[in-house]
Image (cartoon, rainbow, N blue to C red; front, side, top):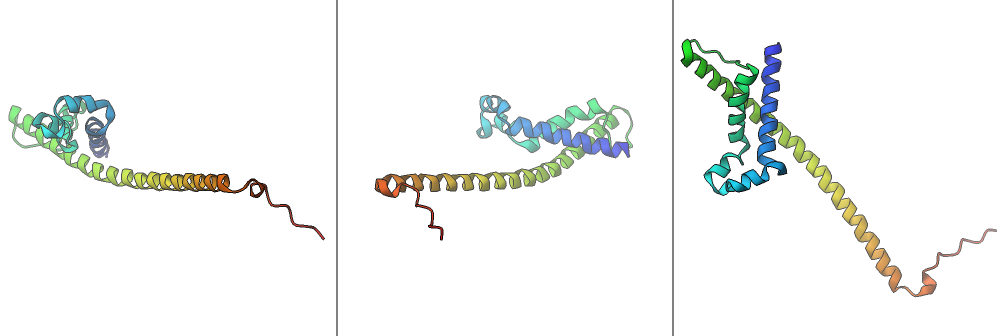
Length: 149
């Protein structure tokens, strides 16, 4: 069971690192220096799926996460096990990225709705202030309270 947990945990790390490199502001200078999505080198660090391969290729041997073992022995077997395990982590990370996108998109919808409500309230406040400035001074005062009997 711990092997399965490690597989999904390392895949989550692969997704997180690749997302950070390709989307976050801290790596924007690197992406721009390499030409962004317009140039071949820039595209390789702007595509989350592409970057997740590189990250998985590094993390598999560092973490010892080899869920796929091949029957070929020797160094060829080690290389194939490393390669296939890295690809598997990349695929799982891609599924995580899809889930992350849905969560992020739903949070974005909530933020946009809140921003729209705040803008509507600010607009109503401005309209109210404009109307108050256009009214004669005697109408600015609060209406008198109703007479009590």
